[in-house]
Each structure stands twice: as structure tokens, then as C-alpha cells.
Image (cartoon, rainbow, N blue to C red; front, side, top):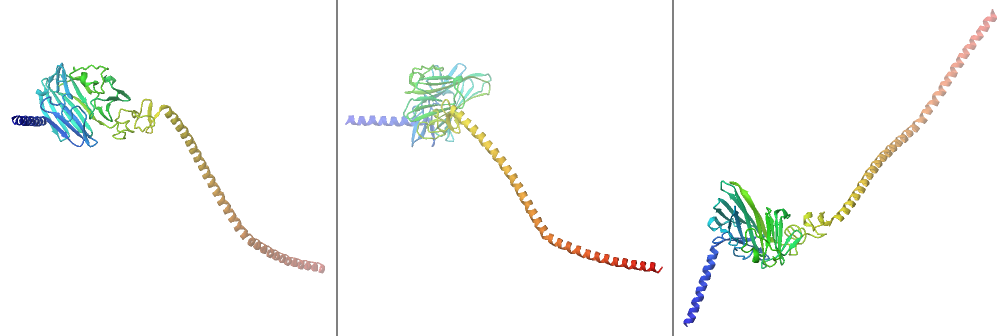
Length: 419
């Protein structure tokens, strides 16, 4: 019986301890959870370390390791001159930023969590993790409150985990990589990258291009690494993956800022659905995978190497040249035909106007002729009648004068004979 009571007591103590641990853990968390994103930030130890989750296919899935709890492997580190401060113990020779917290992790309108620190060198550091659809915007602001300039660098480390997958394959433009990689600023000719695991992927967008971009195996070497982490190209990232963004060193004068902005979100580039700005199914737009020939595109950047976007279709340059040549020929023929048609139409119109004028003239002439023919018999009759009367009168006048002359002649002959 005593053993039974002892077992019950031990179980009760364990139960109470678990409850206290859970409640203590909850008290040490600041979080926001809306329809888009779940952000959890630690506010007791390793203050500012965090984890991120999103709502996808009717369930919450993690985009970083240890979700739904903060993880000291996802953290921020600041270097001022030669002194390193970190929110995590996973940077060698660094000092914890916990003693220098100015604003403990605080929710802002259920859309962001703000944390800030004031370092001994009078450097003010602000970390703002903002919720967006299917992800977050991570903003780091560093201000120099000292009189003298400070050389400042920042390192943001993300321990990637996509739902149940702790690693993945890195996609940059049309390149994919399964081992560690690093790039300097001069080599970064892209503004986003993608890590795929299963049928899900995470996309990171650079609002400011980092001075170094590293993708490493967390478990092997990125864990407890130095500030300047050196990669090993033999290390796989498909089993355990982390992303390191390094900015600086940058000389910041008094009251000047150094600002970093980075977008980290779930991508849908492997779900066999055209969505979230993809130019075609799982390619183009926000996806690192480029679209093959014949797929829809918004710009040439959406198409595979060697292709260009013409009329929203990915095509080869040879096809485009041929297509453009055909268009040129077609346009020339069309323009020539159009000009010929215009000339033909104008000539037809002129000829039609001439024909109409000739027709009107002929009608006028025929009408005038008919009028003349109607008036002519009347004129002829009047002329004939007028001539006969005049002749008759003239004859009568002449006869009368002749008779008078004859009478005068006879009188003259009679007078002479009397003489």
C-alpha cells in the first residue's frame, strides 16, 4: 500500500512540475497568431530568438526549427568594432545581449513583435518581426547614439525547417544545390532564393543584398560557429539546413542608421497549382525554378536560360527572330496593300465623280435638245408666215408704183405729141 501511495505522490509531483514548466515557458514567450502567421519570440533567456509558423492546408506548419517554441539557433548577432554580441550562445566569443535589453519583446497591433537593445558602445539595436501572408518581414535597425563613428556588422541566422523536414535543396535562379554554399555581394545577382523540401518550399527575399550569403549544414558546422563561418562543400544541406545573412562592416556616424529588411515566407512553387504570382504552374514569378519553352511568362526573368519572354510566352531567340521577320514581312505587305487600297479607292472615287458629272452634263444636254426641238417648229412657222406677207406687200407696192410710172409715162407722151 505504501508503495502505491509513493507512486501516486511521485506522479503528482511530476505532473505539478510539468504544469509549472509549461506555465513558466508560456510566461517567457511573446507571440502573435493571426490567420496568416504565428510568430513566437523568447523574452526570458536568449531574448529575441524566435520561431515562425504559417497556416497551410488547414493546419499550422513551421518554417523554422523547434516551432511552435523559440529556438536559440534562429538568432541575431551584432559586431561593434571587434566586440560581438548575440541573442544566442551559438556564436563563439560572443557576449549575450540579454543584459542590454531596452524593450522586451512586445506585441504591436497583433501584427508584429518588437525587441530592442542598447549596447555598451551606445549602439541601439531594434528587431521587428512583422506578420505577412504566409510568412514574415524581419527588420533590423541599428543606430549609433555615440558621438564617434562605429564599425558595425550584423548577422541574421535562420535554422530552416519546413514542416517536418529539417533540410532541403537550395534553388537560385535555374541552379539547385544540395551542399553548403557561400556568396559575396559581388556574386549575388539575384534578389530571392528558395529552399525546397517535399512539396513545400521557403522563399527568402532580399530588400537589401547582404555582403555575404551562406547556406550551411547546421548540425555539423554552423552550430557554435565563428562570426566568419567557413563552408565545407562536402557538407550536405538536404538533411539539416540553415541560412546565414551577413551585413557590413559599415561605418555608422553619430545618429546614423543601418537598416536591414528581409522577407521569409512559405512558397507554393511545388504544389502543381499556378498561384501566388507564378507566371505558370510552379515556375516564374516568386519561384526560383524558371519556366521552359512554351510556358506563360511576365518577363524574360521568368524563363529558362536561353529563352526570352515574347508576347507572354517563353520562346527561343531563334524563334523570336523568325517570328519578328515574319511580322516585318507581314506588316510591310499589309501596309503596301493598305496604301494600294487607299489609292484605288481614291481613284475610284474620282472616276465615279467624273462619271456622275458626265452623266449630269449629258442629261442637261438631252434636256436642252428636247427643249430646242419643241421650240423649233413654232419658230419655223412664224418665220414662214412672216416672209410670205412681206413679199406680198412688197409686190403690191411695186405694182402700185409701176402703175403710177406708166400713167406718168403716158401723160408725158401725150404732152409731147401735142407739142
